[in-house]
Amino acid sequence: MKIRRTDKFKKDYQDLPKEIRYRFKQKISLLMGNTRHPSLRIHKIKGRENLWELSITMDYRVLFEIEGEYLVFLSVGPHKIVDQI
Picture 1 (tube, helix red, strand yellow):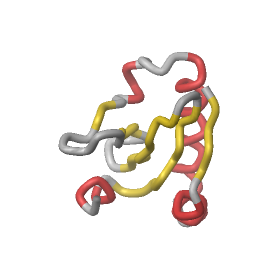
Picture 2 (tube, rainbow, N blue to C red):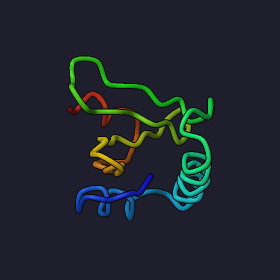
Picture 3 (tube, helix red, strand yellow):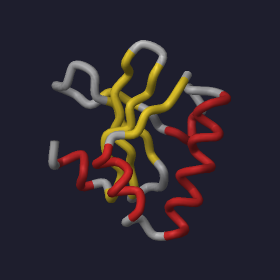
Picture 4 (spheres, helix red, strand yellow):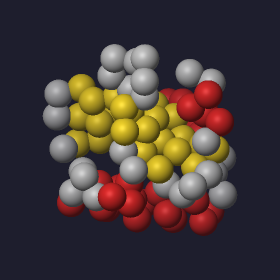
């Protein structure tokens, strides 16, 4: 599995608190080892064909799509980013 990041994701990531960026890196390490790790809480967004959510913490999420062998990170931020799609 490979990762791509959109420009929006890169901007969102820079705006995250330092602790959340650290936790994000931990989650990505887990993801690369086991996409079904329970602490990732990955699930598909209802009503969207190819949009997925990954939990960094109870309050922060990553939205991504799967394109072949790539995970394309679209956005990262507080849980409300899910409501904005």
